[in-house]
Length: 145
Image 1 (spheres, one colour):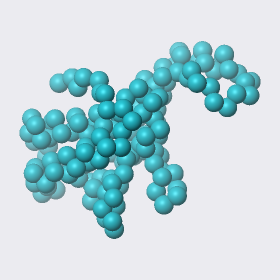
Image 2: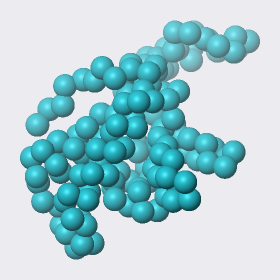
Image 3: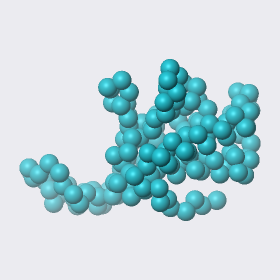
């Protein structure tokens, strides 16, 4: 899963299907010439390998906000939303808002970098608004505390 930056694909995560479903699917379609098989195994795991979900770093390094024009972007694009049955990126940012802004948990990472909570929460909320405006499915699973 990923996004396009200046016409180049930039991967951000690896999605993995249930191994048993995936193996069965491979056996069923082995040698098939079909290009668009609708009933693929659903995703069960996602490894968000690069970049890490650090909302401040994502902004300051130009990953989620283009420093030249202020345009926002998604880490994973929108193509995986239908496959996952919900918008994982939206869920991740809602979780960040819950823990950092609503519950006001302290993270040494942000404190040592001198990031003010209000500034950090403003960024999280701005990205959340963008994600909601670009999502094809805003229904999310319940966040478990």
